[in-house]
Length: 443
Image (cartoon, rainbow, N blue to C red; front, top):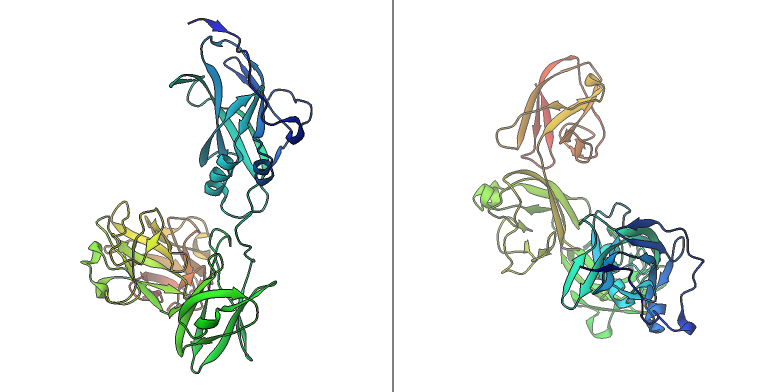
């Protein structure tokens, strides 16, 4: 195949009136396989909505030189967008080479931004790099080896504005009474759900208050257990009971559901028997956590020790839950003990496989965990020698990500306080995960 320098004969990314301001080209930041590129600025800044309004593409890379390419075909690039400099997770975006610049449609960039950096409309830093191709009709050939990327650099991106503005925090306001801070996890745009547990012994008026606006049910839903919120003055009326109030500040909807103390984990590992399954616990009636024996053959989370209440199954997307009665079973990679986390407001879940559980403390200089053994995943035992007052804790997988401690040995909680040995001696130590709260025994 004949090789020749590539001649660029394209139109500009945008006309002169909407051009992106650029500094003088820097020294090329990557040169390989006959291609030399440089960023348009030290840290280019892109306002995707402004570009879209101006009907302009984002010029994100300068092509300084392109030689020794096939004589037939057009040079093009695919941009990879990442939240982190190591490009551990990326979204690919199509580009066009226009007047020696690599240009990206702002709508395409926005779609990738949502997947990589989330829905928050604030300006954020991200990282881009480029794979080069020569395209001839319907065929395309990548330039260089599969690990060759050009022009990796940081960019500053302002995405399209959000459809609604969501504040960082909200409170449940009781008319003439208390104000309760609502629970929330994660970014408010990626998870716009806020919750509060409330005990109602007599009818109470309520509203949701942020720093800027106050919300109440629409006029014909003031006494409803679920409905729509509207900004402005007004009150709803709480039904009598113990409730979890769930508010979605993106859709401006709310619902009252029974606040439950535990979730159960029936599945193939326990013969689909609620009574034989492990329970997850909660501190805020939204996020539940705990140990459970699980099987790849399937399981579900349930809000009661039966199938007659809320059952959480597979939503068809990794880490997502569905309350649809026909939802499929959840699965894990292999049978064993797992540390589970469930958010019933965001409808998300995760499960971390427990490979080991051990004891760590002053008796071993807080170094490596003393391994415990188990036959059923629920009772873990070992022999330990302690001095009086020695402090210790339990941890999983020889790491601090999942650890147990507590005010006493019968109330073990994640990240709890150090336990203390009652007296010097050599003990058989047992960690009991069959009960909630978890417990340990020294014998």
